[in-house]
Length: 494
Image (tube, rainbow, N blue to C red; front, side, top):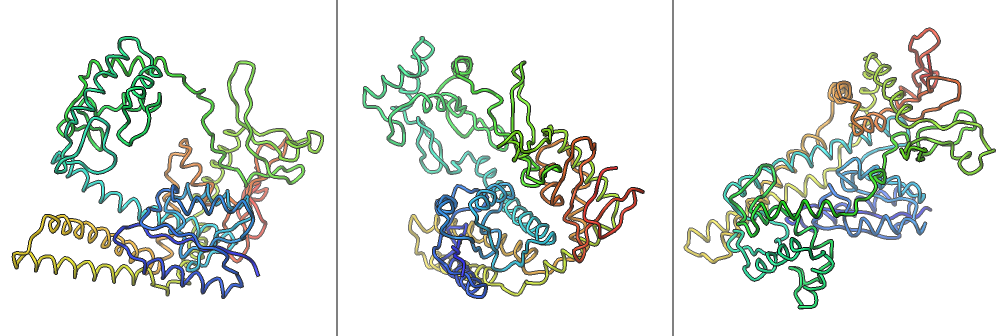
């Protein structure tokens, strides 16, 4: 019996423990059915899945390095993440630690169909987040038009009264003195020491540091400008005039110790998929600096990386091999509609195989009923003349929660509780055809969705590409006559 842990999450403060209980029940039943021993549970409450900055989620990722469990069981993949990039990154960490993510309600296997299905489900979850985010943005825009505070932290120098930004004159005078000191030649370190010596603290009660001062002095709100979906000048009253602000920012940027531009992490889109044709070992990302100080990125045979004499395969230039794989994939798949049709048919069958469990959907319907009942009771109280300062606020909260619940129900109805057609999946695949593959994000999406393995050899211009395009486990191969047929395992070079 293998060890497993359960990860459960709900995103809205208006959701209840019932959502968590439903997830845990289904996950425990799945574990028992599949011979897994549950050794731990990780739960995040009222935290969005669009970010991986979740306390118990991060604790689970960290604990995976202890090798105490082999599986993470989630109710559905959207509980793990609603962002395919965070999902892929964190799954890679778990995989390195010998841990695999299992969905209790979605039949996802290690077959090519399973790989594509998982990518589809993550894409649908990301669609839901985008849909909900759009509604939230509309609400925030209306609040900004009215000049209201829209939540988040309150910048030092201000306070919020009746949803309006107001200057805190005591803190504002400190900010003005900070700018005077800096324009007068004092360094940020000296200003921080001066403030701390006077026992002046930040808005959160911390001591001042160079970084805190720099972030504050770069904040354009101090000039009365809010940059959000648009540029607003009527929301926040100015503390610093624009000329003083611009001069200080220019000086800060000039004096800032910039990190080397080449320190930024570089995504290797073929990581885990590119294989050395000489020894069969995976090729991993590596960078090097030339005599001209330019940084170059490569894929290098892992065996040769550890022992130069173990393999004679030369390194592959990163951008070059990735471009070849993307160009060939676009050519081989999108010019052969019968191939994508076969995949779409298989995906629709797999996706529709398990749509019976409606625990989350039923939970949302109950939340909707409870929400409507609470709104009705408040309205009755208002009609009877019962009114307190908190009544209006509570009613506004319930109305916002109603919109969120209705949005979730809509998306769950479309993508979770309804079968998907072959045509829908085919159109989803075809949406990859017109993407701009000079953009790294699009290259990553295409490779993640369709490419299973790539094999490269020295002296051979084109790589051999294995795709997630099996139909009854028969792959696609381009033969010497440039014709496509099933059952040969890969698409080779021409």
